Image (cartoon, rainbow, N blue to C red; front, side):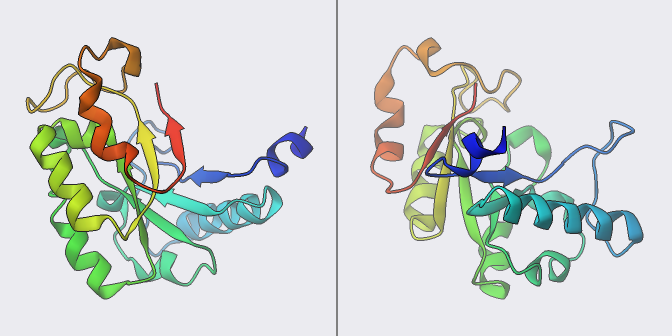
Length: 171
């Protein structure tokens, strides 16, 4: 029932990151990408979503999503992705209307100090949090998106709770 979703206070749409073949879906100039982006836009408006979330390492041409007419959020990525989250700084300079999703587990794969650094640097850009845990702090992120109840020291999340944005439980 779509009424339930459209009546929620906060709805966001996560763009696909895997294609039908199970491989990374790349957002590049082609018909498939155009169709996916149009479908995402339709879903966004149908469900009255606030944002569409993308993994930045999959976007070949950021101009494709810049002109969608919706609010775009880019998610920080884990250490084992090979993506350097410092690249977000450059993207945000070129596309200042883009916001950020702080994925706590992804940040923690670099370590707790790194997550604090991300929050400090991007506080004004962070519009949503994906909250889960990893017991693999600073070691690359082999075990991600565990329930926060598995965390033995909840102070890990104290900086996250200082953010004034929706928190999505992702575990």
